[in-house]
Length: 559
Image (tube, rainbow, N blue to C red; front, side, top):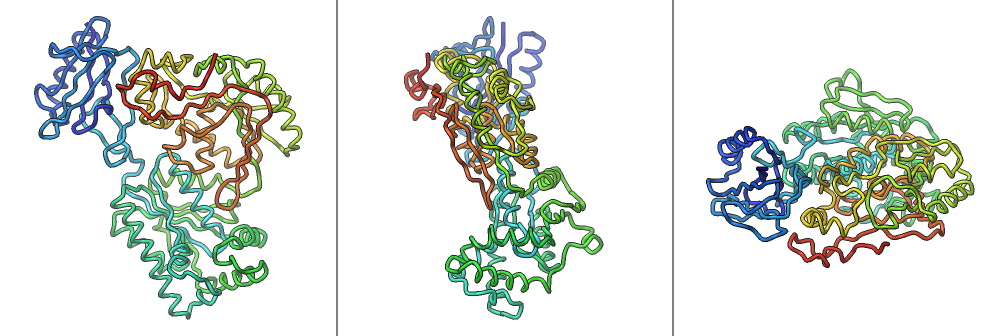
């Protein structure tokens, strides 16, 4: 007799159930039954009779407590008085359909379903909220750093928001007149700027203490030790860890480039000509210079901080307090502002693409080989200096790169998402064999993990070293796969987790990404080689009881 134990959560909807695991050994069965009744169920608030345990020869689930459930429905939860839950299991289970997976709580937070615990917990990479405080004169790249850091932390799953005090000032003072607003003896200007800073800090507190945020980036000059002490005390009072990021630029060329690329595009100078805007902004910088107090190795030795000199020429790091600060430091030490382009494309069309099968390690189709030749010509025509080429370790990306006739690096972390038991299956076959899995993936494609495989969330974590290396490099061509390309594209375009799995990355198309001041410019270049469509949109009906035709309505055509 094979025994399947189902996980129960109090108050969660039916589709949030997951299977704890399957065991065949009788002693394990007795031990798990005891653990269920004495530990897990009481901890979850589940009373006697609220759980149906299912057993059958070969591990196939049957209706528990003498009650057979409807075919195809693997599990359902019903709310009972007191917030307990009843799990009723029915037929249709397969040996691969077990394990833990990510779920969304009722308030939208992420919860990790721990197979050895009776409770759900919010996933948090920080033991308390973190307040990142930018420091530096205007035109030193603070906002550039703030936006990149915010984008990176959100991409790896740390809820982060940027609070730009300059934007608060623009919202309060609709029309900017001149640098005189920033003069140290301008009492009205000082009052307004203080009000803006306090308003931003109130929003920081709301985000970190009430809305479930983990990291807030406070983007302002914060050039005096007194101002930084005020912000540090604010963090202490609210239970936040404070980490300072100071950007120092002494290279005139770097400062001039910052002024031209960023400040002249600022809303403050919409109706000013270039020379007038430059003059005014230089005078604005002078307003801060006399009172500027840099972070000091002796006076500020008890603070946690990183000082970045001339956009990454050198660094000083002090008292890194925890894991998230370590990741922030590592990231900031890898970014640079050297002009470059990143080229992303998928492998050429594969034999399994033609058949509508996912995963596997097939070779290229005839059209895929034609694309490889076209890609080689395209790269030659671009005349890219010192181009590096990266591929996965899968046959189809390697065959695509071989046509380039240049050295390339194989990265295992660039391999396609692991579809587990669904590898080399068509969507129709997945719906036929694993209808519940197919529906659960449609409900939350980012967090859903294939049985014995990966989720998009797993893939993002796997690809973090690639992002770090892309930030360090200059010109790179990455030949990868659909899910991998979506994850990389989501980072550069600052797309939310819910959008990521549905980004369109067609075959035989090159995306050229060029980092600009506060984002990334994207050019899409189709190389005029026909290919099948592999993009499947989210269907309207994602219920686990949907009919097959509604589950398959968005499946692209194939052989």
